[in-house]
Image (cartoon, rainbow, N blue to C red; front, side, top):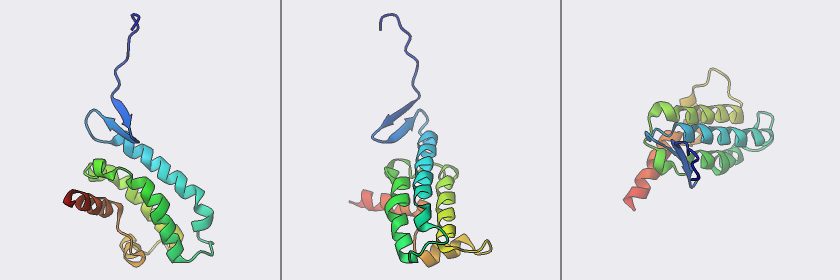
Length: 134
């Protein structure tokens, strides 16, 4: 247009999902990770170690805000490389450790089982199965 050079765009954001040329979703996962961390930091006073909220309420808040932010449009990127989705699991594990005031020696698998919340990868796969079965 008017002899102006238009640079190539390799990433495109559509309906909140950042699509890239190779369908690796690296930029999208990084953006969603930052959003989930910001949600967690805003809710830290309510969900932290010294909070008076019950564990059930902390779990509900996690499901409503943090997990929802991480799994928006997960049907699109749920089958990305497991290494790319590992950053979501790290966020989830940190949240559970802070919410339960668990010691360093408690395994993450024990926290997952006791809180009865699926890991993010399993949750995304389950949502995908339900969607595609419909």
